[in-house]
Length: 468
Image 1: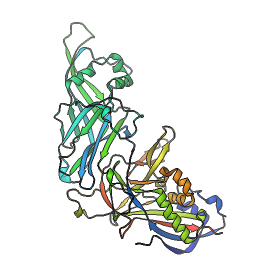
Image 2: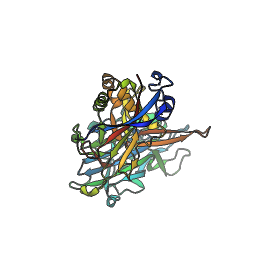
Image 3: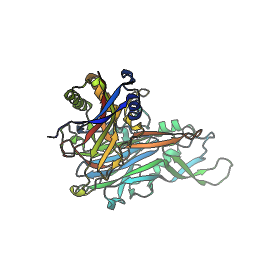
């Protein structure tokens, strides 16, 4: 059994003003009100096990305005993971009424969606044929359905595609739809055509699904599609109304998908039974809402409390200058039967935050991600390790009472997941704003070292203790 704690004194002291300004960027005032300005602090280090478990990222937020996830994977490690989506569609809103003429007759209807990226575990499957199916939802997509759950009652199980959609991962997914569906759209009333909201209330959303890989085969492909570059194209004939005696004419009616509205991504996983609280030599992890490396905040709190008691410290007098987690991972693919491990660019702790406006929990990176020097859990391939800063989280776990942490455990629980970084510029200045969000579109499988491995996951801290 490994020793859980190692400590060593450093040979220099610093003033508290330098310590507070350079070490904790997210909450610079944490504990500062309790420290005399002239008190010198001796820095020390400690290292302890990170008690990794495995837990699904249940109730992952699923509403987007720009992308959809479609595909399926089967792996020996996790079984089948499937991804589908629903999206609204409605005519462009204009100030003028849409005039499609009289006696509108369908000729053909198809839709196109541009692909932005694909994920495969085996490059030989990059052009794997996938059967795509389209159904009509029994509801539209809105903010009342935030998460990735699809019920059988949510959609009509009769396909509206022509039944011959085989997608091989090209730049554009093109799907031919049944003329009967197109005719229903052409029969829409003028009020429905002129109002996106009324149109969506009448025609609801469309559901897109992908068949799983054949039984007994592993692999698959995940397609990320741009719903802001997706359109239904209806070719039809009509009787002109602007002048009598004119012959019938042909025209094309284009309806965008998800224009100024929502797309809802759904996913299902066979890996749920693999959730475990027991320490293991290896921890298997996957992307999106699947199995994650998880840290129970109460277990981590107990670990920290034992360390504090062993050192004889008063937890209220401990100042965490820096806390770095390290997640070593396995790079040898020889243990995988048919697919390669596909590690993401980063793995960073995510917790559950409460949305006060919508009254729901959502996953988000810990606020430590905004620390100036934080690399946000970037992968270090030379060291085969993920590393990131969680200083303020460890500080709170050290000084807060166990009952307080337990009462709001979602705020302290940790799911290690990829995060997305986005930067927006201010048009009125040279400044820019960086934000991070939980990645809900990247699928991966990986093998991390667990608590029982010789090179175990850990947290390394630099800390100081105030004098009595």
